[in-house]
Image (cartoon, rainbow, N blue to C red):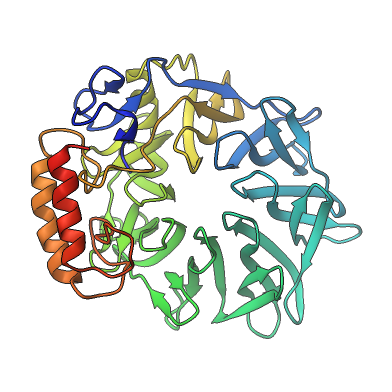
Length: 431
C-alpha cells in the first residue's frame, strides 16, 4: 500500500495530479502539501501522546500526562479539539485505540479506590469497564476491530499468569486465550486474527499470531525475544520488533515485517542500534514506527518503510512533499487512517512532548490490481514477474497466501488461473 493510483489518470504513473518524491518510490496525490498539527494538551497536564486515529482521520485518541504520574485519556477532533473522556472513578485513564467511525474508544482506567486499572470501552453513553478474567485484579484493553465490536488486551490473573490475553465481544464478554503470560496487542479489521506475545517455556517473550484454530509463534530475528504490535486488514502481515544477533545480542532490537511464507524480515534502522514497528497499512505494504538515529545524536525519529524505499525518516519524507514542519521532531508513528490520508503519533515541539496529526496524505490503501506490490515506476514489470513466485506457491490454495501480498486478485478467496488472468488484464491496462 505504498500509493493510491486510483485517482491518477488511466495508464499514467505519478504524473500531473500525482506528486512523485524522487528516489523514494512513494507518491502522494494532490497539489497541496501535507499539513501537521499539534493536538495540544489538556489543561493542567504537561505532555500529550497520540495513539490511534479513526478511518477517515477525523478522530484521534491518546492520553495526557503530568509530573505526578496522573494520566487522562482524550478524544480529539478538528471541531472539538482535545476532550477529556473521564475515568472509571479513579484519577487516571489512557486511550489506546479507536474504531473506524470514531465512536468506540478502548483503553485502561483506574476505578475509585484502587491502584489497579481496568480495561474500558467508551461510547457516547460513557465509559464502561470490561472487567477482569477469573481471579484477576486488573486489565488493559489495547485494541479494537474496525466497528468496535471486538476488543483485545490482557488481564492480570493469579492462577494463569501473571498476565493472560483476552478477546472481548459484545455477545460473549471476556474470553481468555489458552496461553499463560500472554499479551494481546492488536486485532485485524473483523477481529478474527489477534497478535501479541507470550512467555515461552524457555522464559522468553515471543511474538504470537492467534486465530480461533491456531496459535503460531512467529520466531525472532536471531535473538531470544520478539513482540507483535500491528497487522494488516486480512491478518496476513504482522509487524513488531525483535532481538537480533547484532552485537550486543538481544540488546540490538530491530523492527520486522512477518508473512507466512517469508517469515520475519529485518527492516533495519535509521542508523542507530534499535528500531520498533508499531503499525502497518491495511494491505500490509507500508510499515510505521520509531528508530534510533546514528550517534552522536541517537535520538528517536518516526519512520515509514516500503519494499521499494526501505526505512526512511518520516520527517525528511514529509518535508520532501512540501510539508512545513518547523521545529517538530517526529519521534514515533502510532496510527494510520484506513483511507490513508492521515498519520498520528508523538513528537517534540518547542521542547514539549505533543501528540500530532499529519493530514493531506494519500498512502494508497486501494492499490491498482496491476501494481502488485505498490511500486509506481518502470520497476512494475519486475513486480509483475515476481507474481510468478507467489502464484506458484499459492495456486489452488485458499486465500490469504503470498509473501509480497495477496494474489487473490479477483477476491473470490480461491487462488487460481483466473487471478492470474485478471492480473494480466489490469497490468495491460496500466490502471
